[in-house]
Image: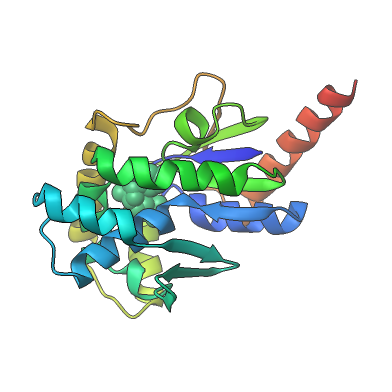
Length: 219
Ligand code: DC
């Protein structure tokens, strides 16, 4: 098991996908599952603070990862969950125990077979504290905002630099300060600052570290 955590825009998504492909591992994008759940809450027209309704909804909604696709109750929502509105709602909902209690066990079950790269905010600390290799990816706020801007542009969504920076900073604050499973580097995670590095370079660094761990494990 390999766990990759870090703040929004640190490059986790792309790097985790490429590292998984390189190692022949499955990718478990835990953020996509939180986003899918948020999408379903928005779709149902529920307010995040309506706890009884939210609880009922969360109990019966089914979130699946099928290869690269994210599925909510058999509907493919892979593209729809990437909007800034869903990102903001996800950050709010992911503070709630009822939401985390739903997804954490599902993620643990999905990871149990091993041969998996888990990507998210709490995979090294909560979902898979016994992962063999843990990474914490970070980058400067400027760089993370710029990356998020490019990522949204590729999806046809234009945001200016100030908005991107503000959104990322707000999500950082919300993800790090929450009581349950806050974004935090696990004590035994390897921290990698990706500022100024290409995706290829980061994947290369991580793959090398995994290889080193394997050799140490064998010796
Ligand atoms: O990585 P992402 O942008 O797709 O994550 C969306 C939100 O989901 C993010 O604000 C924090 C939350 N999240 C979480 O609380 N725990 C995870 N393991 C993954 C994501």
